[in-house]
Amino acid sequence: MSKYILSIDQSTQGTKALLFDGRGALICRADRPHRQIVDDRGWVEHDPEEILRNTVQVAKDAVEKAGIDKADLAALGLSNQRETSVAWDRATGKPVYNAIVWQCARGAAICEALAAQGCGEAVRQKTGIPLSPYFPAAKLAWIMQNVGGVAERAKRGEICVGTIDSWLVYHLTGGGRHQTDYSNASRTQLFNINTLAWDDALLRLFGIDPSCMPAVTDSDGDFGMTDFMGWLDRPIPIRAALGDSHGALFGQGCLKPGMTKATYGTGSSIMMNIGERPVFSDSGVVTSLAWKIGGVVNYVLEGNINYTGAVITWLKDDLKLIDSPAETEALARAANPGDRCYLVPAFSGLGAPYWDSDARAAIVGMSRTTGKNEVVRAALDCIAYQITDIVRAMGESAGTALDELRVDGGPTRNAYLMQFQSDLLGIPVRIPDSEELSGIGAAYAAGLACGLYDESVFGVLKRTSYAPDMAEDARNEKYAGWRAAVRRVRG
Image (cartoon, rainbow, N blue to C red; front, side, top):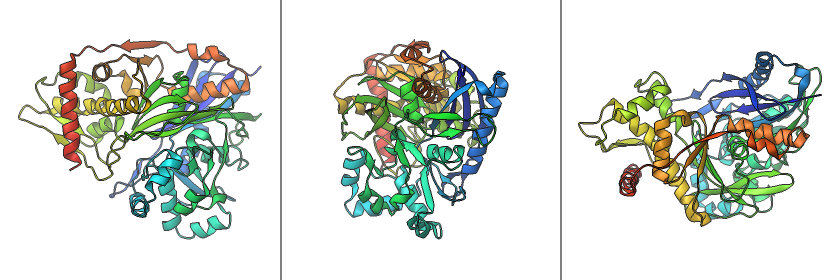
C-alpha cells in the first residue's frame, strides 16, 4: 500500500524535496540551490531549466536518503515561490527567457504608464492588489514587449506563461497539463478574485494573449500524473499546488477567519485568513485567495516584504560582517542598548504597507556608538519592524485584534528576533517544531486529497511560544523611531 507523500517546495534560493509518512510526519529532506542571476541594474532572474532539473534530482535524493521504496509514493504536492514568472514554447517546452524573479522591479515603467492612464484603482478592485512590478502581470508584459517575436508567437497560441508551479506541472506531466491553482492565480494581477477567472480586460491591459494562460484548478485538485521524467516505474498523481505562503498558512492550520501567520524567508509574507468573502483594505495590505480546497474558496489579507532574511544574506555576502546567520543572535545581544540606529532595507523599494518603488535603503540615526554589533542588531530588528507594520495594518482592515502570530521559516531559529517580534506586537509568537511549513502545507493538502490523511494531521506539529516582555512605553518609543526612519528614506 502506498504510504508516503512527496512534497516539492520550490523557493527563491533553492528546491527542497520533503517526504512525509502516513501520519503526516516529516521524515526526510533533500535540497539543492540554484543560481541567483543579478545584473548591474539589480534585475533578478533564475534559470527555469535548472530549477526543473533540481526538482527531479531532489526527489531522487530524498527517496534514496530515506531508504524507502519509490513505489510507495502515494502522491505529490507542490509549493512554489509565487510571483516569479516564466514564458515558454508550448511545443518544445523551452523557456523563451529566464524566469523573472518576484524581487525584480523591471516592470516598474509598465506599471507607471498604466497608473498614469488611471488604471490603478480598477486593477486593485478586480485583483485585490495594487499596480506593482512585484506581480507577474508586469513581468510577463515586459517579456512580451522586450523578447523578440514572443508577442507574435503568443497570438498564434505558441506560448505558455505562468508561475513556477505551472512550469513544473507542465514538465512533470510531459507537457500534458498547463495548470495553476487559485492561490497562485490570485497573485498574478491578471485574475479577477471576484469572478474567480482570468480577466480579459486585464490581459488586454498588459498585452498578454488569453491563450497563454494556464487553466485554474482547485488547490487540492487534479494536476495530472508524473513519473518524474522517467524516474518512477509507476506515475503518481499531483494532488496539490499552493503558493509557498499559502502552503505555510495551510500547514500552520490557519483555517479559520482571523488566524494569521508570518513566513520568514528571503522575503516575508504575512497572511490573515478572512474567510469566504473578500475584504478590501486601504491600509496597504492586499486581498488574495488563500486557496480553493474542498471546493471552498477562502480569502486572505496579505502583506509582502522584499527583504527580511535577505538582509542577513546582505550582512554576510556583501558587508562581510558575519560568516553565518547563526552569529547574528549573539552579536545583537552584545549591541549597545542605548544605540538608536535603524536599518530600513529598501534595496529595491518598499513593499507592503508602503508600496514605494522609489524608496532606497539607509541606516538612519547612527552615532559614535554605532558599530558592527549595532548594525547587525538593526538588521534583525528591521525584520520585526516590517512585520509589525503589516500585522497592524491587517488588524485595522479586518477590524480584529490578533491573539497570536504563528511563524515559520529559517530566521525563526533566532531567539533574539522572535522575542523582539513578540515584544513589538504585544502578543505571543508561536513557532512549530519544523520550519518547512510551505512544503508541509502542500503535503497535507495532497495527503488529504488522496485520502491518506484526515484532519488529525494538523495536530502533528508541536509549538513553542515567546511571550511579550517589554514595557508599553518602550515598545511605542522603538516603533515610533522606526516609522520616523521609514519616512526619511521615502523623502
